[in-house]
Each structure stands twice: as structure tokens, then as C-alpha cells.
Image 1: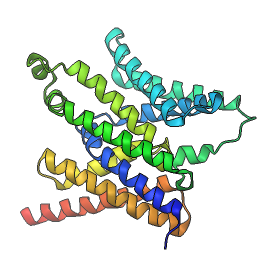
Image 2 (image 1 turned 60 degrees about the vertical axis):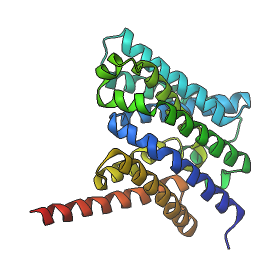
Image 3 (image 1 turned 180 degrees about the vertical axis):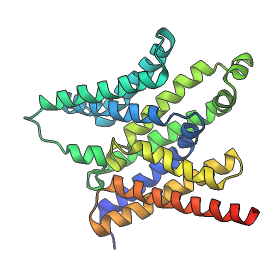
Length: 267
């Protein structure tokens, strides 16, 4: 009924959605949307280094994105620049360096469009292992730090006073963000992975009444986005990443319609 590449892409996409759901909720709660963009832009440098030195792309992206995230945390402590300025500086600098390196790699042929926007044809069995094993590790670590991470999200000073070490928890969370970007490259693409984090979580926030519901609905929204997006990509021959994000956008719009109807009933 379906080719092997589509089944692999579907399994990979569902694995990504299970992880981006809870992570995306924290991105919304902590207002870190631009932070996700910074890491995804820096991932291009990781891709070019992986191609240059013939190493695993996911591993290289994880190392570079983690390094950028930790540099950001360090700069926030040692400089007087506002956070958004530091995010813009690191995002565009790492993207520019990556593009410069690509200019030196004209003798090497690789699918840059597939890396930027996702390519379901590029998903292999090894990628499935990386996505599901990596995703399981991310969720396990997230479960371990859930309480202090949520507490520091609500009130950083109170979490610090309670001895929850929010600074260390924040560093771990940034590394988890780098990890999900690394394992999602081939499915969603570097430029759109932040959308996979934000849009299902934003949709879930519109229809949920508490944090647990929001996490659950975010996961469900991500799963539906992957299924609808991949089927659409297969039928109309569009890149997988934009198709998945577009499906998520449609779900978000539907959630807004529900909010409007509820407000009308209340009035």
C-alpha cells in the first residue's frame, strides 16, 4: 500500500512528535521561541562540519547546538546585553559561518534543501534508531528534571530558594533542546523544527485547562500534524517539513475557532 520510505518517515515523525510535545510546552511557558530559532540556525554549522569531516550529522548538530546554547547561558551572565540581542547575535553569526563554510564545500554534493526543509526520502533505518532511542533518552531526562524545571518556570527565585538548582536545570533543558533539533533534521528540516515545537503547544494551550492537559494535547497535535502532513506530502509532492508545519497550523486555526465559539457561549 505504501512504500518503505513512507513507513520509515511516518515512524520517524511520530517519534519526533512524542518528544516535541512536552518540550514545546516549556518553550511556550518560558517564552523561548527565539531561542529555538537560534539553535536551529546554528545547526547549519553542525551540518557543514559533519559533511567536511565525514561524521554523523545528528551528532555534529547536537555538539554545535549544545555549544551555542551553553555559550548563550555564559554570555547572559557575563555581559550587559539583553537576552534577545544575544539570541540574534548567536543565531545570525552561526548561520553566516555555516553558509561561509558551505561556500568552501562546492566540491562536495549534498542535499542542502532537504536539510533545511526536510526530506522523507532521506530517512533510513539508522535514523529511526537515532530518533527513537534519542527521543526516549530526552523524555527520560525531562521526566527527571520536570519538577525543578516547572518550578523554575513558574518562579525562578522560589525554586532557587527551595534548593532546586534552577541554573543547572536550565542548562540541561537547553541541551535537550539541542538534542531534539539534532534528531529531527531529516524529518522537519533545520529551519522549521522550531515550528514543530511551538505550533502544537500553542494549539494545546488554546484548548487545555491545566499543564497536564496542555502536554497531552500538544503531543496529540504533533502526532496529527505528522500524519496529515506526511500524507499531504506524499499526495501533492511537497517537502515533508513544510507539509507537517502547515498541518499543525491548520490545527492551531481550528483551536482558535473553538475559543471563539466558547467565548460567544459565555457571553
